[in-house]
Image (cartoon, rainbow, N blue to C red; front, side, top):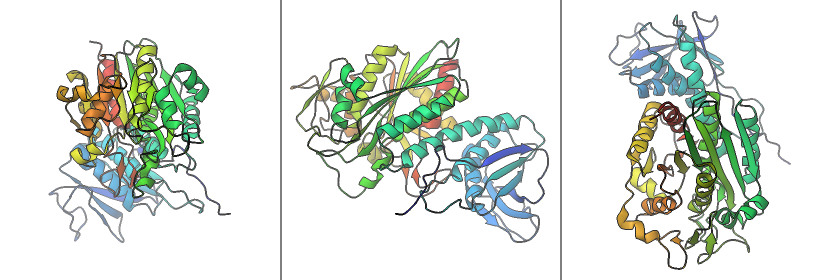
Length: 473
C-alpha cells in the first residue's frame, strides 16, 4: 500500500524575523522601486512590482521590484521573492529608514502566503524557504510583523481546510480539527453538535443535505467572549465538505474542485481563531454547518419540503443548491439563540457570482449600508476586493413559496435570488452575505495567491471584526 503524509494543519509558514543586522550566510535580496537606479552595477531592473531577477556571484542574490510602493506592490514583492527563493533556507532584506509599518506588513503577508505550499506526498521533508529576515533599526516593525503573521495565518489555515482532500475531510474531521485548534487559543471555546442533536433541534436543512452521505453532518460552534465587549458579531460559514450536487448531480468536469466547497466555513473558522489570537474587543460567535452532499437512496429530492430550525419551510427544486439549505438553519439558530448585533455569512454559493464578478472579486450583499461599507473597507485594507450587489425587491416574491414558505432555487438572477432566500432567515437584523464562489479558488498564482484554495474572506472577516468591535456607536 502506498504511504503518504497529509501536511500538518495548520501548515507551517516561513518564519519572518526582524533584526538590526544581517545574518552571516543568508542570501540578500534588494528591493527595487520603479524608476530607481540599478542597485547592482551592470544589472538592469525596471522595478516592476513582483518582478524578481536572480543574480550569480556577489553579495546580492535577488533584485525584487516593489513598483510604485503601494500596498499591493509590496505584497506582490514578498510573494514573488518567497516563490523564487524556494530552493534556499534563508533570505534577508534590508529595509530603509523610509519604509513604513504598512509596507512591512504587506511584504510579510505576501511572503508568508506566496510561499505557502500544500501537497499530499509520499516524500519526506521537501526543500523550502524557512526564514525571511527583515533587517531594520525600527523596533516597532516587530509588532507589525506579529499582526501580519496572524492575518496571513488565517488565510493559510482557510486554505489548509479547503485543500484537504475529501477522503480525509468529512464533517466530523472538519469539526474535530476546528475544536482542536480552538483549544489552543486562549479565550476561544468550541462545541460540536452531532446528528442526534441536530435532529432534536430541528435542523431540517442540514439533515436533508447530509442525509445521502455515510458521513453524518455536524454543526461547529466557536465562541469568543472577551470581557467588556459591547458588540456581538455572528459569523456563519458554509461547510459542505464535498458536493456531488446530490440527485441534481453536477457534471464530472470540475467536480474534483468540490473539496473546496467548504471554503466559506474554513474562512469563518480561521477568522474566529485569529480574532481570538489578536484579542479583539468584540464578542464573536462562529457557526459552520458541515455536511457532505452525496448521492444515495437516502438523498433528499427535488420536490421535497424541508422544515428548518425555527419552523420555516422550504420547497426544494434543486439539490445542488444545498449551501443555502444549511446556511438557513445556522442563520435561524444563531440569531434566535445568541441575539447578535450583526450577522455575516460566507459561502461558495453560486456560479452566477463567478460569471458576474470573475475569479478575484467577492460578491457582497447587505441589508445595511454601513455594514456593507465597513466590510468593503476591511477587505480593501487587507487586499481582498468586494463588489456590492443589489438585493432587488423585484425578485423578492420569487423566493416566496406556494407549496412551502419559501422556494429554494426559484430561477432568475442566481446570486441575487440566493441572497434573497437567505434574507428570509435573518429576522431583519443588519446582515451581509459574502458569495466567494469565484475568488475561493485559483488555477494559477497571482500576487500572494497560489493555485488551489485561496483563503479568500478570512482576512476581511478579521479586519471587519476589528473595526466592528471598536465602533461602539
